[in-house]
Structures are given as structure tokens and as C-alpha cells.
Length: 159
View 1 (tube, rainbow, N blue to C red):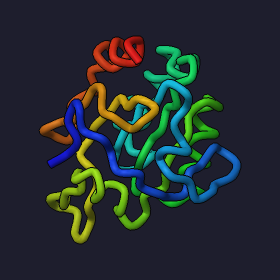
View 2 (view 1 turned 180 degrees about the vertical axis):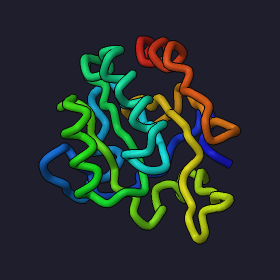
View 3 (view 1 turned 45 degrees about the horizontal axis):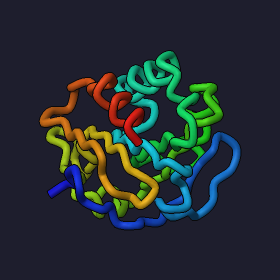
């Protein structure tokens, strides 16, 4: 079962991309002083991911004080860095979940119908405090639902 409010997310490790470089980084190291928002999506350049992440840029998520904005998708680090350059928001970073280990640790990995041998995480967002405790959790029950941006922003304000 995916993390819910009050759970502590396991301290996974994966390549963290910043638009130029990537380094093996734990979730704890990726969080800022107040915590972070972890947004899981299938693939960085999917139409839905492009739509969501541009909305986050327009909403000013890069200006959250001491709160990291961390994406998770199944793309490799070069595609993640290209996506971050396309977004043009230096505060955002992405974990490259190439093998699905991060998604599996969050219990979000699901096989995709009509996509042979492809699995992606359910679209989801988690607001974590600096100790990785979930303060807000959203997991979509379909592949196209938008994230509840205002609820996520309210949870960030309470960190």
C-alpha cells in the first residue's frame, strides 16, 4: 500500500538529476530543511507530465522556502536532465527511477495495459517533512487525474 499521512517514507537512493548533472542521492539528502514534495509520474516527456510540471512552474513551486520539489519518473538521467532544462525551473530536481526500484519501494508500480512489459508509478504526490514523514498524500486511481495542486500547496504551507 502506498504511503499515507503519518507514515515515514523509506530512505530510497537513486540518481538525482538537476538539469545538468546527476548523482546517487538518498531521499533524505534530497529534502530541504522543511521537507519536500515528491511527485511521481510515468515518463518525463509524457503529455500529462509536461502539463503538470509546467503548471507547477507557473504556480511558483520553485519559490517554496526550504522545501524541495522532487520528481520521480522511469526515465534515465539524460532524459530527466533534458526535461528539467525544458522546464527551465532550477529549483526542481528528478530522481531517475530507471528500474522502478523507487516506485516499487513506494508501492506505486503498476503494469500498464496495452504497453507490453511496461510498468510505471501511479500518478501521485507526497508532502514530506524533513524526517520523511508524510504530511499529505495523493495517489490517483486512474492515469489522467490532475494533482490537487491547492491541497498540496496548503500542506506545504503547514510544514
